[in-house]
Each structure stands twice: as structure tokens, then as C-alpha cells.
Amino acid sequence: MRRTEQYEVDVPIHTYDRALHGVHVFTGRATSVTEAVQRAHEAVDAAFAARQAGREIPGQQDGGWGARGVRDGWELDWAAAKAGPWSNPFSWTRKELYEL
Image (tube, rainbow, N blue to C red; front, side, top):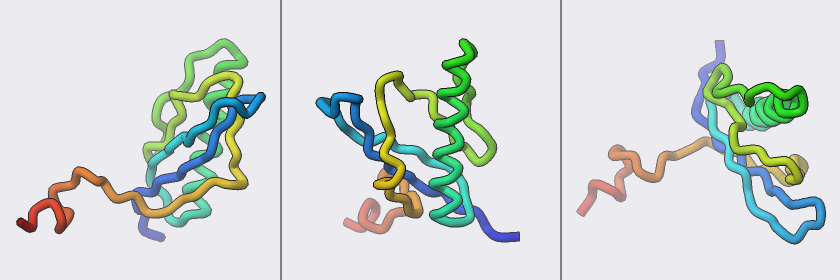
């Protein structure tokens, strides 16, 4: 069995008229960058499907993936998504935080 790690997936977002833009950030556990992007995409697909069916957007899925902040009118640019291991910037184990 492959070891899972915490990943971050950053997906550029635009409105349909491209006037507004930003990045939607997803985090969760996966065994690779490829799996992380796939799991984030699945979470978004499930969220939009639930909204279209008039149901509540699902919470975190297996591995911690979820997409509660999705908005109608936003398109996610999955081709430009970037992913990598997630590092908590507030972790007490980060060397630069405890070295004075």
C-alpha cells in the first residue's frame, strides 16, 4: 500500500466574462500529485452536481477533500492547476518558526 500525504491543489478560477479571477485552493490526502488533482476535481464535480440537484453540498470526502466554497458562475481552469505536497505555514515543527 502506498503512503498518503497531505497535498494542496491550486486551481485558477475566472468568471464567465473573465472580469474576476483568483485561485481556489483544495487540500487533502493522496498518494501522488496526479491523484491529488483527480480527488480535488471529483470534489468539485460532486459539489456542482449536488447544487444542480437542489441538495446540500457534501462536506469533506474520504481523505479530507471537499469543495464547499464553489460558486455558480465560476469556471475552474483544471489545465492550469498546480499541485504539490502541502506544508502548513503555521506548523510548530517548521524550523524557521522556532529558530531565533
